[in-house]
Image 1 (cartoon, rainbow, N blue to C red):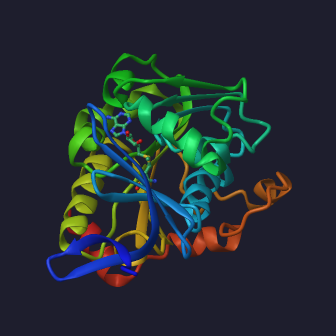
Image 2: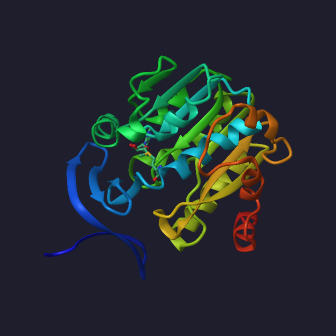
Length: 285
Ligand code: SAM
């Protein structure tokens, strides 16, 4: 019997591979190519244009870290805007907080949502059964351009990389509009690429420099994502008012009583302590 391996190129000389049981589905949409696979080691996973978006085994790390960090800095967040996030994992996590009143989710490609509802119900499970959530199938860049000033407390940019449809979500115009639509104590969290391989590091620096130009507080935090390039991944934390460590409200977050597998309020502080080479790269922009 032949082994079927899925491989993702990380740099000229490195690949990450998973042994595949089955290539479940493939579709080309007007925006991107979507593929679903099954594996023994990581459960189901899906790719967009050949890049791993999530696996069932490690998605909890990404989705807890994108949502719990801002909720622990401002536990009074009520109105949330998710850009991208078609698999539903970010929506699922933020909706665990009963204090959240409204979540608008703007995904450019409806097919990602529909296919994740079919093949990945563990992440898409909250996309059709929570009245607080409203789905919009449009470009996030255009959505924030038209959104009202001060209308959200939190924006979560759960995007693809800055090639293809995700490109506009890494622009100066996008971050400027995010600032405008956020409330006075608003927070922006964005998928901030990775410091390790050259191409990813370049994008990390580009997006940090643009966010720094638009927000008075612009920090970066790290987490360990086994199936992303190098396993070392970052989110950006930008805010009008709050410092993510000095303003951490650990007791209040712990009072939510949310059971997490990765995030805790000690790790929160550590996540902002970056390795020297990453600090230097970010300071150089
Ligand atoms: N957590 C994953 C990661 O970082 O690899 C991926 C999150 S999610 C699948 C990314 C989503 O962003 C995709 O479904 C894609 O369709 C969506 N997306 C890309 N560009 C967009 C845009 N301009 N506006 C709204 N959604 C966009």
